[in-house]
Image (cartoon, rainbow, N blue to C red; front, top):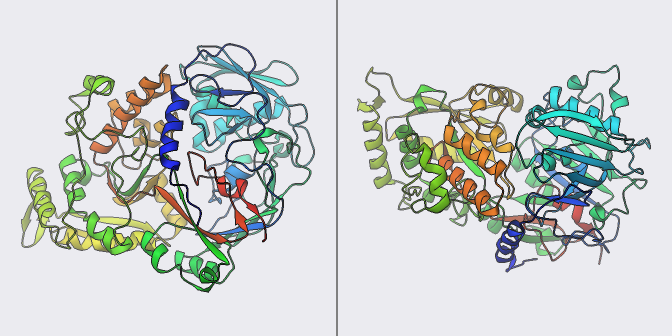
Length: 605
């Protein structure tokens, strides 16, 4: 088992050092761009520190996914797409270094240039950059991709496009974007836009494409084969144009990256045990200890690796839809949080081995402190003191039970809170002043076996309060449609956040999502404080200001009591074929997005 016991301490130190490097960015072409200061790696760097330039080429990784897919275009609103395609099949203008928050290095673009105020940005393309069909990547492709994605593409691309006043070609290889909004993150956001081939879509409806049209892109991997709803196979492109780039040195070592799809987690795990998959990510600590003892493990053919990280926990749990009158009162939401017996559920499901999420940015230097707000954090919050909920300024902690099934103290507190909100028990049923019962639907999608177990335990606890919960499990397509339109009472919710929060925070918690469909603001949060603090994050000119604004936002989110938090995953548990290896140096982000398929390699003993 590979472990790095010093990683978390080093991660926090590295993040702090990266964020504390403040300097002026002059208007001259650079090999990379950082949110604050200059990139840590010099122009002549050879590889990212967590990659192995000497890794052999070959082999394959086969992972399992629960669910299905009906599209291979991850850039549009329509359809369900394997999430990996967004990160593995298209080059962007710049590439992330997962060891540096808020820092990008040239990929399709050989240089980036911006003014100190970041009112504009220029990207100069590498002349040798080309698509997988051998055609060159042009400025025209860049401009078309930005406009198309920003207007009819997936909603994640729309926000940045509205902040672009002018997009224009400067010369044959250079494109310039001028902004109409103060937003220091915009040059970095644009650097991460996928670039598609304009000519492919002439006379075709980009927004309606699915399995019939695979986007032509530029990346080390391209889709080689698939069967709708069953599998997708990506093959390494030996003719890829960018193998000599430092951002790819030690990357894309595997010949094949394959995703197999299963109806539920049980079928996926059985396929892994049978050798149909050669890597499996386990989220349940108790299962990791108790069920990873099958023959391939005991023989050493499958290795168990634990990979820690220093990124924020994000939020995972049951979210309450405040668009529903039932959940509009914070005291009701607080009562439902008290009724959720985390300590008992954690003990039952994981043997008590998983720490709880304590805030949206917990497990990182961006997470809120749980005592009273102080200093700049308090200064950010005080203008909104009248709209903040209890705990935002004074300090807040999630309720802790005694670990027994009865959860007496917290149930009693929940009863008090419900009474304060106007709910009383009549003949064993919790009713409001008009005699209407407290009842709601907890909506889940097929394949959510762990969440279903949580829901059943929770529903039993709520029945003791006189609350009637209907657990409804529907297919993925129906579920996605209902989520797009916020058609639910309570459901399972998971949003990952990073060490470099920015514009995406508006899509997560911004007030526009209260009415506009397709956001991640499932809770219907409408907070002037949150909107303002996201703005402070985006316009911060110092590391201290950025961290303080994020900590303040974390307080608003957490004390809003919108989500009943589950446990966090501050380590990744990966069981994999012994031939699959990864470098000893693990990035700050740990096992994140494309780290495994792009950085691991296959080597037989």
